[in-house]
Image 1: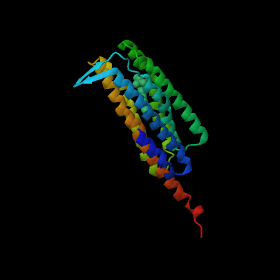
Image 2: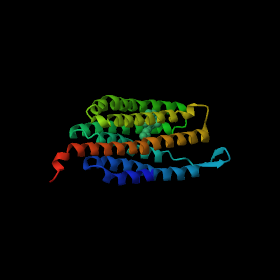
Image 3: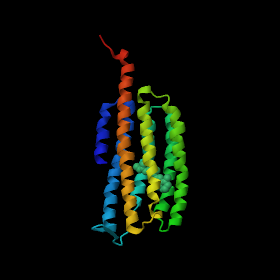
Image 4: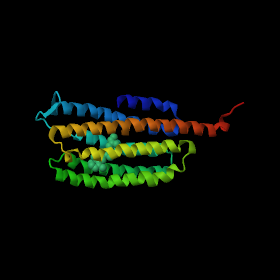
Length: 235
Ligand SMILES: *C/C=C(C)/C=C/C=C(C)/C=C/C1=C(C)CCCC1(C)C
């Protein structure tokens, strides 16, 4: 996550000014995650003991809040970086960012009480509520943003569609991981499975999508430089 943050921030000089904010935000997402992974790691080593293949709880509570505070910040920012790299009109950028950002905050806030609940009934209830804004985001990504993708330069459309698909596929992984306690695992094993699953999804959703945002920004910068070329030809 730290390396991805540095890569995205240094990549700023490779793109034209309209795409720099998208890269700064992509880097920020990875930096926020890097910080929280240090905290998650500390909390996990305090809460669990690994002996061979055996994982046991030490009695200290594992703090899920580090991950959810991370998501509360990074999930809206991930949607905003996707909107920003498309370089839509100002009003469209603001309205899409607000709607997607608000839905993302709601999704994470509703998921948290279920994540920390001791019983599976409460987990299922909050998980279901959290799925409502999740479905809205998916619908917006494919319908609202779909129309905007059709207005992008032809050479970047496939790349933007791939970034959207990678976002959708990695985001779809979180609710599946969330359901781990409903499978035939419990206690420390369930918690470990959840943490591994979320971590893998995070790497793809944050660093993986970040690199795609970088590629889109570089390609769009090149296209716009080329079409603006006549104005810059001097003697
Ligand atoms: C960088 C972190 C990301 C992209 C996190 C995304 C998280 C989700 C899409 C979580 C979704 C959830 C549901 C749809 C229902 C169950 C509860 C959640 C919060 C795991």
